[in-house]
Structures are given as C-alpha cells and as structure tokens.
Image (tube, rainbow, N blue to C red; front, side, top):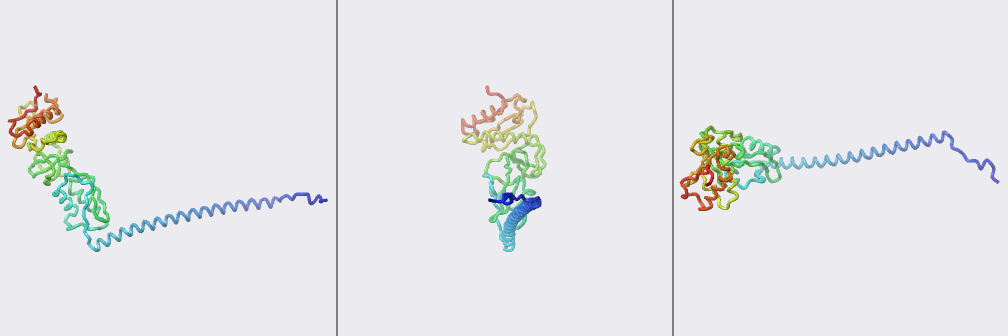
Length: 301
C-alpha cells in the first residue's frame, strides 16, 4: 500500500516557473536575431553579386572602348528607320556633319554624345535625334524633315517642309519638289526656324492638297507642274488669280484663293476645283498642248 507521501504530486515552485519563462523568451530573442542575421547576409550577398556583374559590364565596355581607341579603329554610321526618299547627297551631308572635320569616326566613350550634338546643331533636316554606340556601329535614330517646296531667295535656294520649317538646299532627286515663286520677303531664312510668311504658307497649302490628290491617281499630274505663283496673293477683287499653278510647257491653271478661303472669295470649294482639274488631265492624259489656260475660280456650268 502506497503511502500518502508517494501519492502527492510535486508542484513546480514559483522560482522554477520564472526560470522557464526567461529561457523561452531568451530563445525567441536568439532565434529572431539569427533570422535577421541570415536575411542580412543573403541581401549582402545579392548586392555583392549585382555589383560584380555591373563591374564586369562596365569593365567590358571600358576595355572595348580603350582597345578601339588604342587601335584607332574606324566605325560606320548606321541610320535607323531612314526614309525611302533619302538620297546620296543628304546621306553624304549627314556623314560629314557627324564627323565635323574628322576623317573618320572612331569608338570613344563620348562618340555618341558628340555625334548627336553635331547633327542637332548643324543639320536641321533631322529632329528628335537619338544616338547610341553598339559593338559594330554608331546608330542614329531621328525624324527626317521632308521638303515640300523650294524657294529661290536673295541668299540662294532653300526648302520649306509642310510645317513651314526652313531647310538649307541639298539636291534631292528621289521625288518631285515644286517651286514657290512670287513671294514678297526674299531675305534668306534661318534653317531650322519657321518661315512665317503668309504667301509662302498659302503656296504650301496648295501643294499639299495637290499631293494628296495625286496619291490617289495612277498617272501623276504633279510631274507636269513646275511651280506655284503667289505674287498676287491676298489681292481680292483683282482679275488676276491669287494663286496660279504653272505647268511645264502647258497652260497656266488659275486656281484662285488659297485653300480654306474659297467661300470667302465666292469660288467653288477646293474639292470641286481638284475634281475639275484632274478630270481634264485624265481625259487627255496630259495638260500639254490641250488648253491655253484653265480657270478654276468659277463654278462649272
């Protein structure tokens, strides 16, 4: 028979309970510290690996540039997304401007920035210029200003694009460029700046709608046109047409008011004028030798 003493359960003392709680708290703190140290170590390793990779990339770039500079290796200029109408004359000017007096382009750390600065400052045919260096070439990405008309000023021949930005003259033979004649202000413009003259703007508007109509035709009228005469621009009430289309060895076409002002001058709308002109052109396949003159200022009877 067991004694009463043996049947009694031994209760932990208050002192022992406190010690256990302290041990658990210490274990939690130790575990948290270890987790933090582990995470910090992992992050440090990742940063070190990224730094080493970046260092190798920079080192490779530096070595490539230094070797090319040391060997004086020339590099070509590559135009990205160049327009179809770009001809050899303009291509030559782009290359010359990129080099700016140097015999050739070479790989250097600042080559791309130098080329971009040269093109932006000295060749207004290009805009929104971006230049980067690759292992094979200096690549130039840009928007190209396409001339819509040429004008002979007192300072020589210049172009203007459809936004009325002036361009210096470079022979272009890949598409037809009409001339605007009879404009009042004959001072030479500043390439890259707007040519803000109302008579020139009127000529450009007329050329633009002729080009739009021509794109819809199988045979192109534009190749029979020489120039747009704006010498009588804005002279309302005059018997002389405000705008005159001069053809090559053919009749003068009395267009009338600038596009957008037909109603104010009591003239047929531009669409009707274009349809009449192109109907006459399609009928004979040419305007040469068929008419003494063509007057589009009055409605068809």
